[in-house]
Image (cartoon, rainbow over all chains, first blue to last red; front, side, top):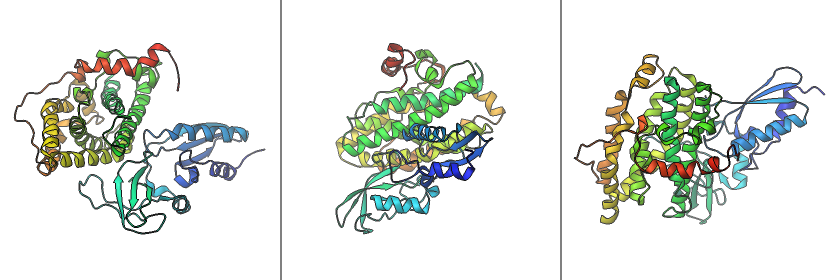
Amino acid sequence: MVKTETDIWLLLAAIPDPEIPVLSILDLGIVRRVIKNDDEHVTVHVTPTYSGCPAVKAIEKSISEKLTAAGLIVSIVTDLSPAWTTDWITAQGREKLLAYGIAPPVDEVDKSVLFAEAPIVTCPLCKSANTRMVSQFGSTACKAHYQCNECLEPFDYFKCLK
Amino acid sequence: MNSLYKYILRIADDSLILGQRLSELCGHGPAIEEDIALTNIALDLIGQATSLYEYAAIVGNEGKSADDIAFLRFEREYTNALLVEQPNGDFGMTIARQWLFDSFRVLFYEALQQSKDAQLAAIAEKSLKETKYHWKHSSEWLIRLGDGTSESHERVQNGINYLHKYAEELFFMDEVDAELIEKGIALDLTTIKVAYEQKLNEVLPLSTLSLPTNNWKQTGGRIGKHTEHLGHILSELQYMQRAYPNMEW
């Protein structure tokens, strides 16, 4: 059966991020373009979140498997520019993150300013804004480690990348 | 081999070797948060190196893969700066090395975004975002250790005193750069030299640390002449590919 571009997007929407499985790869905003070359061939442009993110290869494999199973011949292109930003996480993606216990990214000032004001990150559990950063680097490249000063819950913050 | 290929390898080798060095600390960080931070930074650096080696494989056009270039060269063919191959030492030394390097890399990538080579500009744009985090991390630690106890101050100061002689090499340029600067591809490093000194001096007073007055500089890595440390790094880095040729993850 011939797949339309909409069919292909729907297939992609069902692929979870391997590290944060509540998010689909479309929620993350890493699929930049889908080009149908003809009835059989499709090119998918993907951009990595972080250069060394080990999920990138797994995601490419999932895309390839999913679309191959749908009878398509897939080629995947990695786009480095424009570089991924957390602004591309969809509104739905942000809600899913929060529900999963990860605080979604909030706007931060430029990291190249040394004592730039830290963002106010809200505790995903008790919603208090009285939280502190434990470490800028968390369990994966895209997360920082926080703790709530009110309910004491330690939690992940999906850090802002701009 | 053409100049662009050599130029890409210099950037890639800095990232790979420093990434390898930092990953030695995996499971050995001074605290769990720091263990995770240092290995996160290692991962970013190795990721950046991967993008660069993949591009070098295309530019080199010799049928070599990115892995062949990363894993199967001899010591004299690696052109990383001597700074990044220096041992981790104590945490003060690790932070001093990282800070000297990150301060350079932020400025380097910022400027390289303007390269007329679209792929290099794209890699710079991507890498810059990550590198800003690295710089903030190493700078904050430099201040915390420098303005900490007399012991932590002494250790990080010793790190700076030992490593500063290698920082000059980050600004090394030769005919490879000259040709590519002409074409608008490479960055004329003299244009960021003052900004580098300013960037160091932005953090130094807060840390109560100082640069050594001894002006001795040591270079060699960019032309393949390394300190004794690189060989040891490579013996570990290359072991799997040498023992099991063409193995894949």
